[in-house]
Every structure is written in structure tokens, then in C-alpha cells.
Image 1 (cartoon, rainbow, N blue to C red):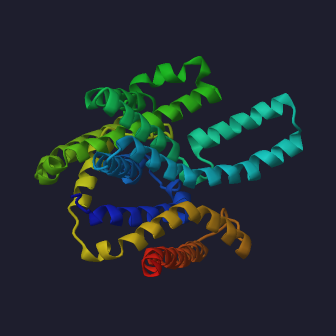
Image 2: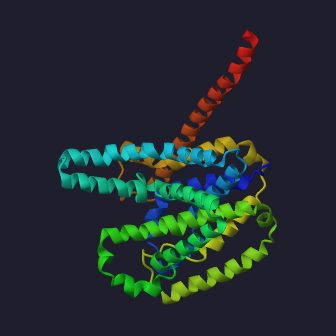
Image 3: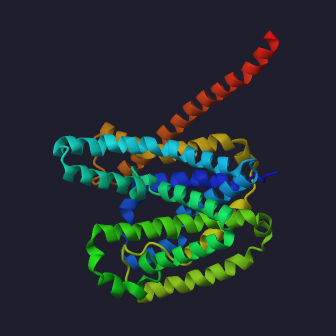
Length: 363
């Protein structure tokens, strides 16, 4: 029997709220920090996105190992994500690609340009700002499953280590080792080179590495659950401290830095804490919280755009109270939408549950 972890449900809730808070307010203020070197600290402690991947890998492994047909399970899992992702891609095409085709005409050069923009949006950046992590998730779930079934976990681990190290060299803590050769590389200013770096960071450094981490934890779930917390805290604390002070004192902050070595143990430690959370209330409201998390994560950007039009505000000029109103209004809209959807889905499920009983009575 699968163990239920309330902490994972709580993480989904607070994770989507943090994403809402970041997109509505925090992103404007991060760049205004007086000492930019302190941003190295956020790289080591920014466990939300990596932990999303760990949770996805953990739940996927637990799902397919308990399914009668593991291949069918992973296909259904990927299809559910795609059904959420594709409408945003179509909306992006309608808003960004079609107008440019109409404006610039269906010339060969314009068709190539729009195809490139669409490919980058769908594969790398996401059709909406909050969805950039979906393509690496789909890629990682499929490749991790395929490697695990065809080649075994050992090959998958080797690929993950190499990918993580490559990401650290190009966009992470080890970047200072190659910074001269990277900055002097001829195609450094080309968009293709930037896309390649972004692909390595998002697909290999984050997606594949952390999805596989979740799968490994799931495979050795009981041993991980019984591990003494201090055996995780002490090495994580030492590594995080040493790495931060090295970067703080000997490396100049740049937006090129996106990932650190210590993000891996910090994420594992955070996930360890999540699976040890106990809460009957969370289990009781599990379905509602999961629905609210999905609605908020997927819908908050669209609602925020609508609110700006409604209030006739410019996000670059908003301050203080306006930011708070903007955040609160979007949150309330997400909550109302969730309540309505929850009632509709419950009513539908109750109706479907009554159909067999009616059939029995007629027979």
C-alpha cells in the first residue's frame, strides 16, 4: 500500500502561492538588492523548482511500480501534462505568431522566424512565463523511465551526473573555471549558443537530475524515510556554507550563474522534511488543495493580465499598496475559480456514481 505524504500536498500549495507572489511582486524587488553578491545565496536555497522535479520523479516512480502496466501509466502521466500545456501553446500562437504572420506576410524568411520563435517558446521558455519547467519535466520523465527500463538505474545516474556537472560548468558554480574560454568562444553572442546553455541548464542540470533524484528516493523510500536527519543536515550545511563563501568572496555575481552544487543536497534535505510532515487536515482537503494548486499555477498569469487591464495599471509603475491589491485580487480569483470547479467536478462525479445504481434498479 502506498504511503500518503501530506507534506507533498502542502508543498504543492505553498509552491504555487510562492510562484504567485514572485510573479506579482517579488521579481521587481530582487534586482534592487544593494549587494548583488547575496544573490548567490538564493541559488543555493532556491529549492522550490528543483523540489517540484523531485516530487514529480518520486510520484511517477511510485505510480508506475504499482501499476499493472508501467508503460501505460507513464504515457497517461505525460498526456495529462500535455493536455494542460497544449492550450497555452495554442494561445501563444494566437497572440504572438498569427499577428506577426499577418503583419509580416507569409514570406519564407518570416515563416522561418516565426517557426523559430514558436520552437523556442514551446521547447525552452514555455508559452507562458510560469510554464518553462514543463518541457524539461516531460523530457525527464520519459528519458528516466526509458533508461531505467532498458539500461537500468546505473546508466541513468551516470547521465544525470554528467549533465549536472556540465550545467555547473556552463551556468553554475564551476563556471569560473571555464569563464575565459566560454566568454572568448566565437559563437558566445549568438542566440544558438544561448539556447544551448539554457537547454543544458533546464533539461540536464534541473529537469533530468532532480526527476531522477526523486525516482531514486522512491526506489529506496523506506531507507530514506528512516535515515537520521543529522546525517543529511551536517554535510549539507558544510557544503552550502563553503560554496556560498567561495562564490561570495571570489566570484563576481552575474545572471549567468543559475545553479550551484549545494542545491542538490539542500533539495534532498527539504524533501526529507516534507515526507515527515504529519497532518490529518491536509489529507482531508487533499483534493481541494491539489485543484487549487493547479488552478493557481496555470491560471495566475492570465488572471494577472486581466487585472492589469481591468484596473488600468502599468506593472512597471506599481508600488506598495497597488502591488498588494494586485496580489490579493489574483489570489481571490484563483480561490473562487477553484471553488466553482471543485463543486462542478464533485457534482459530476456524484452523477456518474449514481448511474450504475439506477441501472441495477431497472434490471
